[in-house]
Image (cartoon, rainbow, N blue to C red; front, top):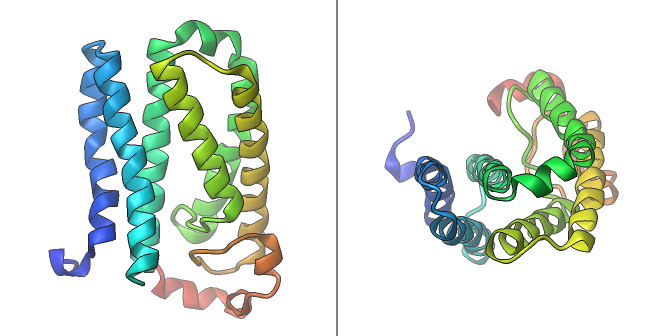
Length: 202
């Protein structure tokens, strides 16, 4: 049974991003754009902090990687909701392109859950790059105005990152965390594990 002792300091920063979701929703409902933007910035900052602490203190774990991924996905989702509410004209103007970019992500999510029973936590270099660009674009738009060149770059990198994630799912029969990318996966001994072992990782 999990207790508070099972979580380290990096995990608690991930917990913050998850716990912040209701508060962010309240700020959207109250139409508090500036406050929402600042608290979303804090959520993005905790993502940088927990990753730094996990590497610096060498406290990375499968549980922590999964928490980090959940926190990342929820923060990104809140950013999208914020854009939908506060920059509705921009979203509607580019809705088709956003839908095209989002479709592979839904496919990746479905494949991951059907194979592993949970979301992936590969944390590839491309995924980290995509997350940074997404964060900069969302926050920049909320604080100032949309930059179209950054928007297009975010779409392109996001699609490439999702396609890489889908490829990695097919390369690994069991759930693993922290895969730098396809090149590194080709040399990863964890790919040789068999499906029955996956029961221990859920």
